[in-house]
Structure formats: C-alpha cells, structure tokens
Length: 340
Length: 293
Image 1 (spheres, each protein chain N blue to C red):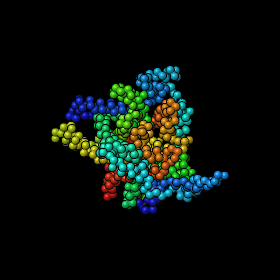
Image 2: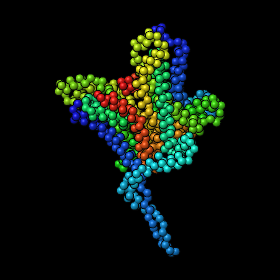
Image 3: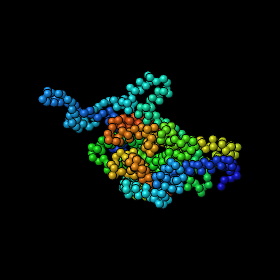
Image 4: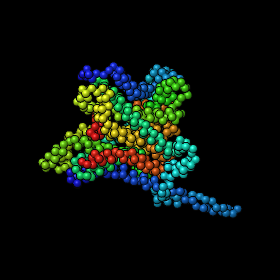
C-alpha cells in the first residue's frame, strides 16, 4: 500500500488516539509534577480607635490571577509522589525503622492509602488470574463432554457473567451475599454464627471480591479453551490411544501441550484486566476493607474537591505498573509480528 | 459418535456432570434470583428473618396485596427517571458503535494491507494504549474539558469512548482483513480502481461478518463503561450504569434499594437478548486473538 493511501486511511483513527489517549497520558505526567497554587496571603492593617492591628487575609484577586496565569499550578517536582497519599517516602522509612519484622512492617504499610490499594490490586491480580485459568479449563472440559444438543445453552449461560456489565454483575452478587440476602443467610447458617457479615469483615470481603473476579472472568478462559479443544488433533489422540496411553496421559501429553499457547494468551489478557479492578469495589461498597489503584484515582477525581494532581500521580504509577505487566506481551508480539 | 474405546468410565461421567450442574447454578442462578426478587418488596428480597420470604413473597402480599409488584420498576423508570438514562445509553451506544466501526474499518484495512514496518509499530502502540486502564486518562481529560466547556455532554463522552475503543477495534479488524485475500482488491486496482474505490466496491461488501463481531464488542464497551461515563457526564446526561451507581448512593438510605434492583434487571435484559442472538459472533470474537496465535 502506498504511503499516502495508508496515511489517509489511518488518519481518523490515529487522530482520535493521539488526541484522547496520547495527549491525556502526557498531560497526566505533567500534571503529576504540579500542585495547586496556595492562596495568596496578604497582610492587612486594620486601624481602629485603639490603634492598628495587622491581620492576614486571602487576596482573592491575586489568587485568581495566579491560577489563571498558570492553570497547571505550582511546579512541585516529585512532591506529590512522595506525600503520604502516594509513595509516602517518609512514612515508609519510619515504619521500616520501627517495625519488628517483615509481617509487622507490611501490616503497618497497609494503613497507607497507596500501599493499601497496591496491596489489594496485586493480591487480586495474582490470585484471580490463576484461578480463572483453572476454572475456565475445568468448565471447558466439562462442557466439551456434554451432548452436542446441550452445548448451545450451556455456552449461553456460561457467557452471562462475563458479558454482563461489571458493576451490575458485582451488585447482583453483592445483594445475594448481603447479610439479609440468600447466600448471606446460607453462610451464617453454615458457619453457625448469626453475626457473620461480609460487609463487616475484611478477610471475607477480599474473598468475595476475588470470588466475583473468578466468576466473571472464568467464562473468558472457558471460551478460549473450549475453542482450543475443538482443534485438538483427533489423529494424535488416536495414535496415543493405540500406543496405550491412559486417559490422563492423553490429557497430559496431547491436550495440555496443545492448549499451552492459549494459556499464555489468557494469562496476559487477564493480568491486564485484573490489574484495573475497580467496579466490584463500588458494587460491594468495599472501600473500607479493600481499595484498588483505579478506585484511588476515581476517589480523588470524584466529590467536591477534584484532586487532579493526586489523581494524576496515582495514574502515572498505575501506568508504570501496567507497563511492567505488559512487557512480556510486548516482547511476544514483537517476536511474532515483528519478523513478518 | 463416541466409540466404545472412547467412552468414559461412570465415575468420570458423574464428576463431569456434577461440575456442569454446579457451574450452571453459579453462572445462571444469580440472574434469575435477582429477576425474581425485583418483583418483590425490599422486606422480602432482603429478609433477615426468613429467607424463603423471597420465594413466597409474604411481605409483598402484606404491603401491596399481590405476590408480585412492579413498584421497583415504577420507582426506577418513572419516579427516578431511569428512562432518560436508558435513552442516553441508546444514543451513546449507537454513535460509539457506528463511529468506531467507520474509523476502525478504514484504519484496520490499511494496517492489514500495508507491508511497511511502520504499520507494525502502529499496531504495537495501539496494543500499549489498549492496556492503559481508561480511568488513568480521565484526570487528563477533566481540566481540558472544563476549560473548553464541553464537560458533561453526551457527544464528549461518545468521542472519548470511540477513542478508547480504537486500539481494540483496530486489532480485531486488522486480523479480520488479513484473512481477506489481497488479490481481491489488487485485481480491482489493476482494473483501474483507486485504493479507496477498491475498498468501497470490493472490500465493503465482504467485510460484514468481521464488522458485526467487532461492533458487538464496541457496543459492550460503550454499554458497560462506568469509569469514564461516571466522570465526564453530568447528572441529567448520565447513562444507565452510572445512574445505577447513583441509586446506590441516594436510594439505599431511603430504603429504595429495590429501584436499583429493578434498574439492574432492566439493564441486563438487552445483554441477555444480545447474547442469545449473537452467541456465535461473541464466541468467535473472544477467541479471535488466541487461536490464531
């Protein structure tokens, strides 16, 4: 394809991505190095019948003018990154010096907002991803063994948790595990503890969020594995059988090697998606027990005072996290497509 | 037909069947339970005393006289004006899908046909963009949107969603166009068509299966988005998902959580229909990147 034709064909799409993905990324990086201007304070002398007093007041006009002149705010370098709400460099150092052991240190660290969010995000990502793969595989094998007639409806219902809006899926589960909901009641009966409530217990809340995560992403792993199972070579399986392979050996030496490349694909997509975990925390109203990096950004941006710099700094840190997770994908893509 | 040698032992058969039954309950039961419960009053759907009130509808009978009530739906759609959010969602989805597909088919086609190295780099950058969580971009949008006074309007949200959607759309359509033989449009160009005419008269007529699949995923992205729409739409322009989230903040305290339940069921219904009709396309879309490598 000629250069000029290529240019005109990709122009609209490239312009959209440049304007609304690339520039905002640059903008959050710049924003994260600035803080809002402090108010301009002036000294005013109030002279009354009993002499003069100096008082400080806010110079509204000068403040407005300054903000108008430099809308980004005051350049602050890495100040935002180092403050208590982000990397908390000082607190980190103090905790490290004070703590008795690594467990104690991590426990204290989880009281700092950024580390609390990072802790949950990473736990969620690295617990949900492998479980998704395992469950997806089991379901795929089970559906593949069902009679052809039933497979359509089975796939239909399996897809539901994955296709439905994450916020809505989260709410549906949350209402059921509510202390007054059907699963909540069942849990209390099983644990024989009438005061048991998912909402009040951090451990249970984390577990529920991860159960939601597996519930909603296992269908994705399922569908990929299911498609993979359809293409397992019948000849190889038959050859293995003739050579006397048991059922387990057939799975172990024929099916699993065939599905292995799919597993890397699922793992990488899931790592990316789980790292941005956000909606279930809103649905489960879980912020007291669990927060994520995306939730922290959302929280900074919402409400009366929009803390843009703080949100921008968390965003940049999140992007760095994504970049680390993504590096294997990029290398893989570079290898497979780059040579072509 | 399974031959005798392939037949599974009974124990394995039972394990597989049990897995299927348990999974089907886990996947489908929550939806049916919520659908059923949405026609009850709150005291039944959330019952501390006796969970089977939700089945019998005891309090519903006491409060409304019948075993089923549509109070939740009335409250959500009429009183809290959920119809407005539904209309906004319709507009957003319609425009996001049509604009993303227009931009995506042009771009994806060019990327599939170009043999130069920069096409590869373009796709690689798109892949990086695909990995960015959309919420990280929002703090970059807000100051500019406030400044230009375009914050809060539907067209703004539509453009943003289209852009966020582009990387994925480009990748899918690119791999789809790769499967259409290049000889097809090249022979048209040998016959004197320009590149665009070849695209218009030769490629467009055969591209629909891929476009429908990609369109479904664009639709899902626009329909399901919460992070972006919640942040850049103002109250009266809200789409369904942020509207439901706002029910949680305001109505849960007033005891009107049933509005949210009804709204959740209403917003799930279109997805139900969508999967029913387009199951095959969704499956092929989800596996597109994987099976081919």
